[in-house]
Amino acid sequence: MATETPLRPAGSAPLDDPGTGRPVPAPSGGPGTRLRRLIGVDEALLSWVPEERTRYTWYGALVLNTALLGALSMSLALGTFRSDLPLAAVLGAAAVWFWVVLAMDSWLVSSTHGTAVKKWSLTLRLFLSVLLGLFIAEPILFQIFDKEIRQEISVGNAQKVADYRGMLVACNPADGASTADRPGCGRHQLKVAGSPAELAAQIESNETRMTTLQAQVTRINEALDGKMATEQRECGPDRWIRRGGGWDVTITCERARKDSSSYRTTSKIDTYEKQLAGMRDKAQTLEAKRNRASDAYQPLLQKTIDDKTRERAAGLDSQGILTRAHALHTVAGSDGFALFITVVLHLLLVSLDALPVLAKFMSGATMYDRVLGARFDASRRLHTEELQVEQACVRMEHDVRRHRVEQDTAERKRRTEHAHQRAQAERAARERTELEERMERIMRARRV
Image (cartoon, rainbow, N blue to C red; front, top):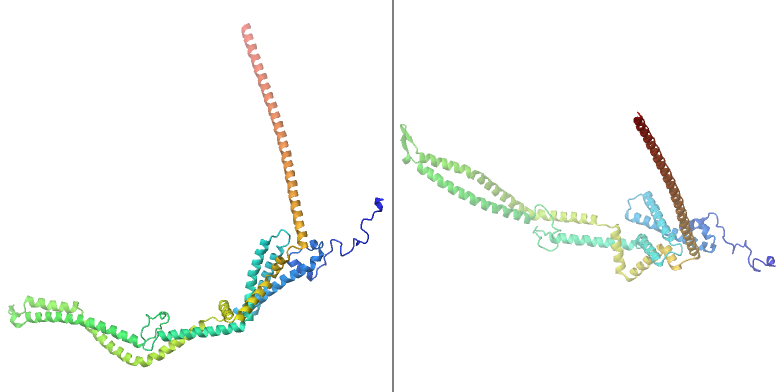
């Protein structure tokens, strides 16, 4: 009989066998559940493929480890590059960066669940993970090569200071001569007061001005001597004339006197002579300074060079990220083994940081992905069917509304037609009544 046929083959597992029964209830809480929740795993859906629980638990651990590594990298970076920050600020920034890395990796991993994810999409996610890994790996590399980096920065800064001092010494000779025409000396010339060359230039400039002013004074004095000679000639006793009972000078003499007096005022000969005397005094003072400058200038120049060298040494960076990056590049380029270790550590740290997405890229689609993909397909079909049902309902509702409108329109037409017919009948009745009254009046008029 068909009723006596067993529903399960002999020797098969019972329905309540935890190894074959589906779905297998998920454990309530626990660290494994929290780790899987980090990467967006649906526990209800995972109950249908419980064999994947271990895989996704370790998957969530990878994401958590990457975030912890990012927090460690941020704390090392801030502790190295910003040593003035308090510990609370460093820990706060590390916590924020931990959350950022955790959120980004969680999104990158959770967005790969399902069979609809394509290889090119995974490649883009892997590229983002590599960028994030490079950012996380650099501070850790700086700490690994900290001793070598500090030594390289110290040697490099000392060389820079020595080169700078050498240029200052070369571009500022002890005699104070100008070196502006030398290559590279335009930015290394120092302004030290009292240099012999500067005093010599001032003496030469003063002598040039004295020569020019002396020539001008000589011309004015020659012209003034000519006018004074004319005045003496015109005003001599032999040129006097009698006027008012006595002897007086002529009008020509008065004109000569006025001309010489006016020329002395307008030519500013007195001012020029005072300026010339001041220039002579200045020339003596500058000459005395030049005689003493050879002994006093060199200590001043040496002190200025020392001050500039100290300023240069204090201005060199030894903790900046770019400085340390250049030092790490120099260390790696100076030795083949150091370059090998640097490349290996870079690849290792980047691989660790990109491991969540890299593991998904290498492992491909899992059974959970297939189940999730099937749910996506079912949800998409259900959504499509729901839209179709909604569209059909809306269409039928529109048909009902259209039918109602058509009925209302027909009823309104009928009432309008009835009202029109009734109005026509009433108007015809009124016309008949009026016609009968007119006929009656005419008949009465004829009878009378």
